[in-house]
Every structure is written in C-alpha cells, then in structure tokens.
Length: 281
Length: 255
Image (tube, rainbow over all chains, first blue to last red; front, side, top):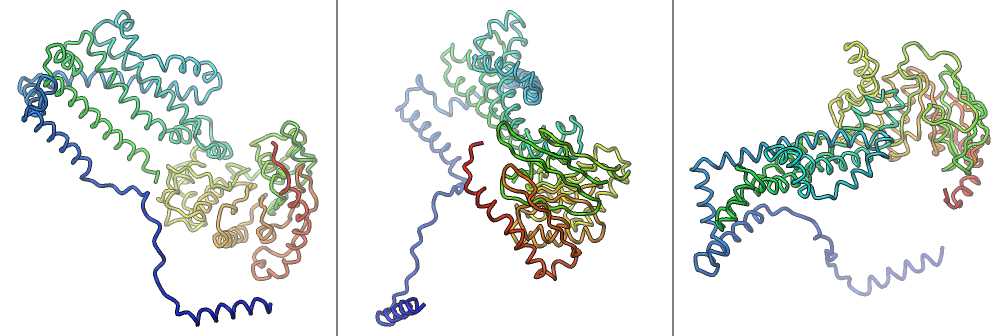
C-alpha cells in the first residue's frame, strides 16, 4: 500500500517538474476501406475508347488489325437499319431463355433431390462430378445427331451447360441451411414438406441465386459456340460470318452486343437478388 | 401433464455422456438443469423433447396434455432459431400453419402472444432489425402460440448481454405469474437458476449424474426483491459446482 502511494507521489513530482507538452495522439487508423468512386468505372471505359479511336485516326493502329470504335458503331447501325439486329438478338435470346430456364429448373429439382435424399446423393453426386467438367460444347456434334441441327441441339447444349452448375449450387445451398432452423421446424412438429418449403428452400435461395450468375455466363458462352455451327441467325452466327469475311468492325459490334447482353442479365439477377433476399442485411 | 425421466443414460460411441438420470417434472413448475459445460444438460433436453433418443432409459409423459395444446413439448433455443426471411408475425405464424386453424383463430393467437410479449408494434419487423433480447421474445411468443404443456428452454438467455438478460428474466417471471407454465430450463448461469427455478437439478461433469436437487420455496415474483435471501442458495450451488467446473475446464477435448 505504502509503496503504491510512493510511486504515485513520484509521478506527481516528475509531472510538475517538466512542463507537459500536449499534442494530439497520432492517427494510425483509416485506409483498407472500400469507398465507391462512381465515375471511375465509366471513365476507364471512355478513356480506353478515346485512346482506341484516336489511335486509329492517327494511323497508329492499322484498321486491318483493329477497326476504330466508330467503324464498329457504323456496323452496328447497319444492323439496326437493315432490321437484322432484332432477328439475330431474337434468335439468340429465344435459345438462351429456353435453354437456361429448362436447365435451371431441372438443375434445382436435381439439386434439391441430392440435398434432401441420401439415396439421390449417393447415386447422383458422382455422376454430376463426372459430367460437370466435360465441356458441353464437345458434345455438340452428338447433340446435333440426337436433337437435330436446328434449335434442338443448341438449346440442349445450353440446357446441359446450365444444369450442372445449378445442381451443385442448389445442393450446396441446401447443405448450408442452418441445421438449428431445421431442428426448430421438427420441434414444432412441422411436416417434412413444410420444412422443405418454408425452411430449406428459402435458406438455399442465396446459393441458388449466386449460382444463377455463373450459369448465365456459361449459357452465353455456349450460346455463341453453338450458334457458330449451322445457325442462320443469332449473335454467334453473325460474329462467325463477320470473322470469315474478315469484317472486323462487324465482329467487334457483335462482341459488344454480347457484352451488353451479359450486363443486362447480370443487372436483372441483381434485381432478383434484391427482391428475394431483401431479408438479408 | 407431468414428465418422468426414467433411468436415462446415453453415450456417443465410447464417451459416456449421461448416467442414470431419473427425474420428475410436475405441472406448473420450472425445473432448472445446471451443470458444468459438456455435462450433457442440453442433450438431456433434446431427449425430453424427442429430438434425440437416449441409449437406455425412457422419457414418459404422465397424463394427457391439455386438449388445446398444439405442440405439447416446445423448445426455446439459445440462438433463437428465427427464420430470417420471415417477419416477427410470420415467425410466430410458422408454428401454427401446419395445424390448419380457422383464419380468425390463427390471427387471434398471433395477436395474443405478441401482446403478451410486448411485440405488437414489431409485428412487421424482420429479425435482422431486432436486438438479441427482442429476438428471444419473438421465440418465446412463438413457443407460447402453440400452447405448450412443457416449455423446454435451452440456455435461452445465454446469448444475451447481462442487462437484457435481467429484463427477460423479469418478463419470464411475469409470464409465469400471470399464467403458470411448466418448464425445463437448462442454464449454466446460477443467478438465472435461483431466480426462475422452483427446483434446481445440479448435474456433475461428464458423465452427467444428478448430484443434488435444490428446492426453492420463495414465490418467483418475490425473488427479485428478496435477492439477499437467495444468496445462500446460490453459494451452495456454486460450492456444489466449483470442483466439477474446474475439472471440466481442465479436460482435454478428444471427442
């Protein structure tokens, strides 16, 4: 006790002797926090386009290697005026919508089965693992024999391509549903179907929706690849034709259409997530 | 309806968890189960509600549950177990939906339990908007809605801070005083046990055995103000538990 008072007194002494200098504590926090800078994204786009355009005008970039953005825009406007744009986009969208919807629905059903039933899991999971890494485009010739060279084979390629990632995201979503919620459902005597409908499926929804993002990009890749074989209309067919004619301006226009298509779909999925997952923070 | 645990023992593989537990829970009494962590008290509660089966022994319901009871054995969980995608009333509704009640009765029950737990103003809120204490009130409302014969409470206040815990203890005492219910209340908090328990069952460390059953006669509603008189009880409980808790704390986990 006495020792403590002694040291306290000592501290008091030193304080009175040297006049204390008051200065703010140096700030060491901050940084490492992401702050959105809204104009940065569009600005990068515009600067790149400007450099590209100027480079073509000044003759730094040969038009044979890369046409100017304005030329690609011209090719795009030709498409609009000839009315072919909607034919190409319409044909592509139809394949995409049918193939993706069917693949996704089947994938969710299979994924739920694997997530919920031990037999389905033991039986189907190895099969899914074996077929998932196969590039579906390699099967296209086979699909052409099975489903015909027209729409059937293209839709089937997209369907198979989207089916497997959806299966995997669905059953891993089911696996990640909080077990205590299921136990809670059982403790209130809920029927099996109620537990699945009201607890398991909504709980797996975040994983299913983020699976959508992946399956949509896969669907677009497969769409273009499938359209490059025996399609009259479609963005992929348009790009293939442009490529074989060395019409690089049309090729760039076609690729830009795909990119915009992808952006629009990603935005739509974002909206769906906002709606279905509005209960999340 | 009373509950009787008859020589309940349990082991997970070679690990003996519970050993020869016999106990009766009478109507309208709150039985607290306390013991060091890992003594199998939560496991015992899962047996009582039929979510798991013991290796030997049985749990018996004596007498019929009241006819109005929709779910005689109803849990309140430590982590609330609310569906994050449903509102407060939606979460309560979940427990009733499978019973196919007439619409008006369904609504009336929800309104009644929300009023009893002071949640009426929060009916449309989502769980993420609520504090921990409010979430547990929702879980209590949900449990009340099915008119349980026995409430099985698994450390219901352990995830809450101490002030919220005080508030909820008051709420539970109020609920019981207005309309007495039967409960098995698992906790490791001695203060909760002496505030809420009519009987306190002290379990030993693994394998859990009943070490002692402490009765407290003081009415629940008076305990808050006569806390000093309960102090000796709480000390006695701690004396019983101290060695067990120390030994349990020093055990190597190899399960």
